[in-house]
Image (cartoon, rainbow, N blue to C red; front, side):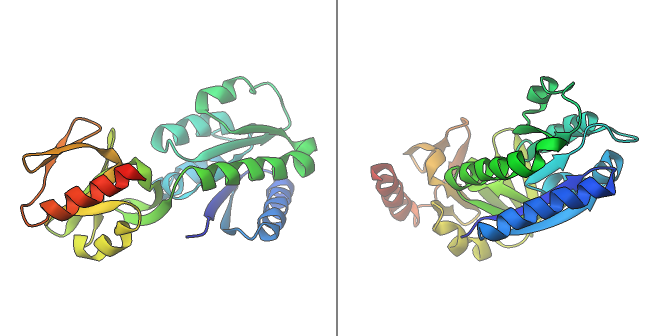
Length: 238
């Protein structure tokens, strides 16, 4: 699975929106990275749609904008999406230390875009390639790309699937049978008719119960127990 990036550029000056887009596009084409870019005129326009906050991997934010400024937008975005990479591109250094509060990956001055922006993208790409597999799902509320290593398990509930992560539950419509083969290559095992479990979060398997890293427990059906136990032991040996 190759790296794909959904990128937002938010600046109230058309010149810089287009300038940043051009630099980003040139670099990602050169690096053979698949991407999609959307442009936004200010923080209000970006934040008014929940799907915007969830679907993007990277947002390049100006700080001094009319309406909701970039720093306020960053606080709002970070609260809703802990995984998005926030990059400030601005003319003022006044907020550089506050950028740590929203875990911004870089603070770039507009006069240094040509030099600093490609370096920033290189670091983001390197980190994302090394941090595990990511996959996009059509969750209720909008599409979202998540890190599969963060998933504890997926549970089927009638026609809805529950994706359980530490501190968060996401939902989408679908059938667990359709996900089983796709998720198997990423160390997920079908332990029960209603559950796909992440082998990486199993602490122990005992008495047909799987104990997970967050303290929760899910069942293992008797027919599936030998295969799940074997896959878990093989995973631990890797």
